[in-house]
Length: 129
Image (cartoon, rainbow, N blue to C red; front, top):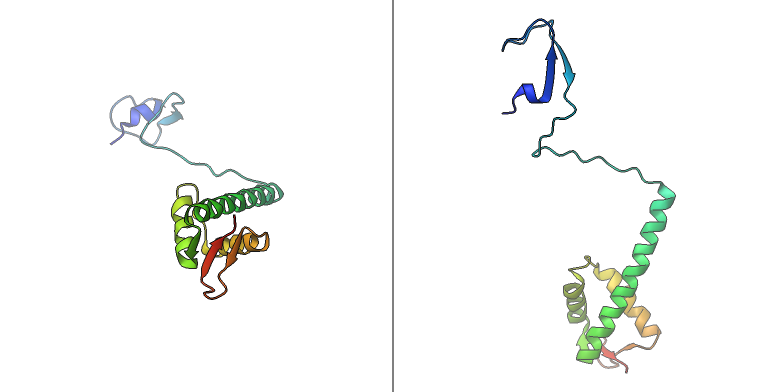
């Protein structure tokens, strides 16, 4: 256990080992216990939080786009589920992308003519160089 004499300094009539009701204690400000840590929550303004969230979301979109293009450049054609799995695997070290966000960025890349769906197999994605 923790020895009480390190945490507080007793002042008063009692100087023995016994703690009495009339003993007075003051905090020992130089006391440090390395095994006990306190985490204090940081208050964030909701407007500032929204700005930070939006910028993080925007940066993640660019990361997902770059990863999709990088994978498709090397593979040329992939099944939809294989592409989603590969993007998740590669981005997992940075953040955990959700499949719905990857799908949204894939559709964006199709609209921008980086990718296209195979006419015969709608689950096959092809890279347009």
